[in-house]
View 1: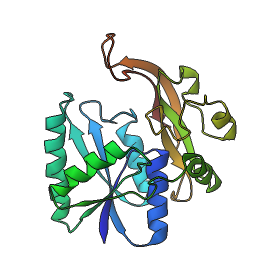
View 2: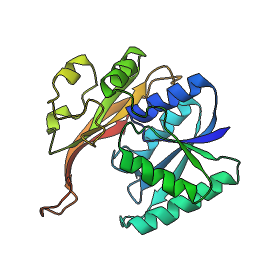
View 3: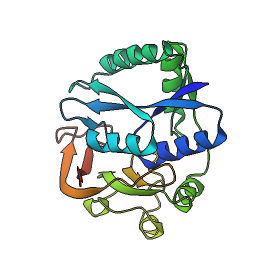
Length: 230
């Protein structure tokens, strides 16, 4: 069976891919990601496209990208994604892998969208304990750096830190250890899937408020650190 891996470059996607490849039930010809135009950075994580490409080269799986317009209209996003998924089905790819763990509404949305083009979702990490997952990630030898934090939960001091047991111990109880609620995002730069580590250096820190300073019913303020290709 052929499947795409929905690729964020972060720890959950990486661990999901690792587990799936270990099982040997799926062939994964592509890492699929969406990048914001014209910045050429992965949506939400803010990581440069060049670093995603280096990840794909080290893992040995081709990177497929969908460029999204600067407008964040959901209808446009759904249309572009549907067109891309239909393209995958022409290559006999009918499965789409995700690193989601327990957000049921997100899983339902993904499955409903995939059904429109005759595809199915695969969720290797679904409902597994997040503490056990992160400990497994570290025990396997994967290494990841924090690239984005939700300002509601974490401050800028967490940016650029490599995830380890000391960093985990610094998290407040209300922060999910895997950041499943969007508390933080990561970039994986080494581990058993990689033929070579990804070299990078830490760049500037920026803060973005997607609510334009106004009170919203969703978390809108995030801190990012730029990772530059070394």
